[in-house]
Image 1 (tube, rainbow, N blue to C red):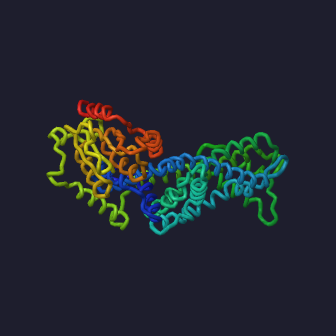
Image 2: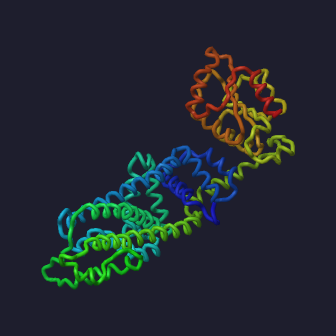
Image 3: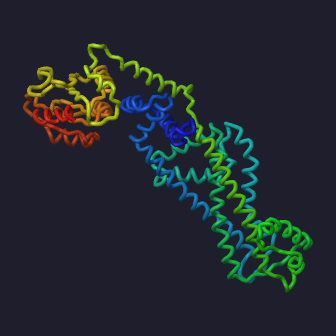
Amino acid sequence: MQRGGLRFGDVLVTRTIGALEEAGPLDDAEALRAAALATPGREGRIVERARLLARRIGLDKDLARLRQGLPLVAFAAAVVVVLLTWSLLRAVIGEGRSINAITAFASVLGLHLASLALWLVALPWAAASARSDGRLSGALGRIALWLTAHWPVLGGRNGPELMKAGVELLRRERLLPWAFGFMSHAIWTLAFALLLPVLFWVFAFSAYRLSWETTILPSEFFASFVRLTGWLPAALGLPTMDAQALRAAGGPDADHRLWAWWLMGCTFAYGLLPRLALTLLCWAVWRLRSEALRLDTAEPYFRKLLNRFDALNTSRVVDAEQAPQLDEAARRTPATHDRAGPLVLVGFELPAELPWPPDGLSAQGHVSRRISGTGDERRAVLDLLAGARAGKILFVCNGATSPDRGTARFMREATVHVGAAALLLVDAGGARGVNLPQWTAWLKTAALDATEVFTKVADANAWGERAING
């Protein structure tokens, strides 16, 4: 959180997860419990759950890829603007050709001034209305974002969903004109920064001359236009046309260098400077307002999540007879998930004829539970782990059976609450015996390869003793 609000990236991820869950809820049992433990605040829990789910489905990587790809697309857009401007300029500037002042001015700055006027006209309505889609305020930025999001190399698999959720969030918070405006103005700023050296190169190595060629307009019209547009560049200290140069403009004594400086000065004063100023303005407004974002917890989606968090808190109250008998020091230990703390033994889906604990497995001083795998039993164990501040957990499973997704889900949910986990595969007396290679490969596939595996009770006892002693 920053300045009492949520970061834009966190809200965007949360909104995107919500949009993805419209097609069907994600498997979030593990993320829900971890978020409930990690963050006490209501908004913070929702955001933390979204972070965990985003990490699991790769949404966080897609967002990072989108952020990295957007500047590349913006640079490419700036190059396209320069090439378009240059193609228009080549129509009036060329080796040995004459130049019409207004046509040259319009070729360099016409498209820029038209788009800038459109943005300024659309800004008041777009900034005040939560219904604005931003199509008229920052169209160039919106195009760049669309290309980035829909290009799999840059936007990733979830790029379109991130863009859709982002645009909706910007619209809701009335940030669309400032966000798209920032991108558009930044592209134009970069374009003019590239265009000015191009103009300098052309005027330095091309022969040209000025002409007042016209059919119905007097030459004074062109002189007035050049005088008016040259005022701001002159005020900034740039070379421009003076009265004497204007009088000689159409004659053989015309100073063509001043005309080149006039056009480059206008490009700098009316192109680069206003776009740079507006880029900084949009960035400042964006920073100020994007640091005070909140989640509307009254929305049905968020209300449902908060109800699930509340139900989770309620389910942690267990009977006194079932609560683990831990000393006061263990009860006061915060959930730092280090290796110090009690060891919890969990027998999972063991055959009914197998005694608990298995022969030779020491359960003295440990918290011990045996479950058949029902939903209520799993939740009870997870609630126990959440309250016990356990250091390690030892799962005991039948090594002759084949592991399944239910086992993986339970183990992942349980290991969130401990510092380390191990698996003891016992031989229930079947003909197959312990299938260690199958379980080892399954652990790796299920992203549980950090779990230590034992087939001997003595090794599991030694591992458990280390949990008690440190």
